Length: 313
Image 1 (cartoon, rainbow, N blue to C red):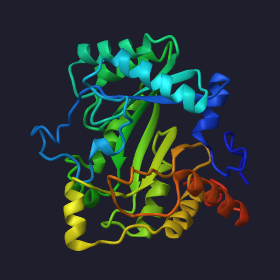
Image 2: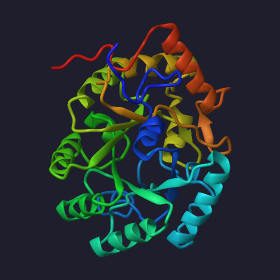
Image 3: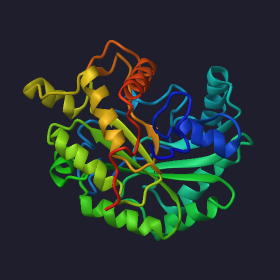
């Protein structure tokens, strides 16, 4: 077994929770902020309709609403998360849509307003690989002198056929060029990936795990494809009824996937769960917490660890 610095308390992979605890000396939670952004594949710049699977209401907490000022969203989110997790330190997370898709002066104003809260110790910005430039990266680098900064890039897949199917309106080459540009600024980068797309086989997904190992990434955020109400994916699913991961199938798949990842990567997420009122498929009988516990047990029973199947190229 390769040394995994943030694998503990039953986890056989690097867990983001423990990474943050080591960095800040206590529990840290992300507070989602709705900045009122859109996306270039939504407003007509590159396309319309947005990503095929996207319904931001399905993953937005109730306190995250752009009709409220940023400081109010933060105050309410911190109150909620402190009550639930007893956390006292927080990362301001600009999550919905493309959170660098605005003029630089507007971005700086919003980011710095979020950082003014005394309990906020970091900034996380979710965006597309085609919506960053040198000026934005320089701003984030400047902020990182005083705060933890995490740039989250929605790669989603490393196959162009999948990106086209999703209506992402960017290519794999776009993602690779963006990561190369970001690497010059020494920022902590997350790649967001969706697993279980009908355009990809399991073998292709395992191959992409190996390709991710070669990219300049610190974190991975993974989850299975979910069919959400009021999306174009929901209409397609009704028409084609393409297969989605079953519970045990995904558990076994993600365990294997994790063994292929280099042991330095930290996993921010391996599953997500949309509220029942939005979710069409797959409908699983267990909570996210129960899944994580089952994954821990499965990997423990099968002596599986992150990095077991990783080999340097």
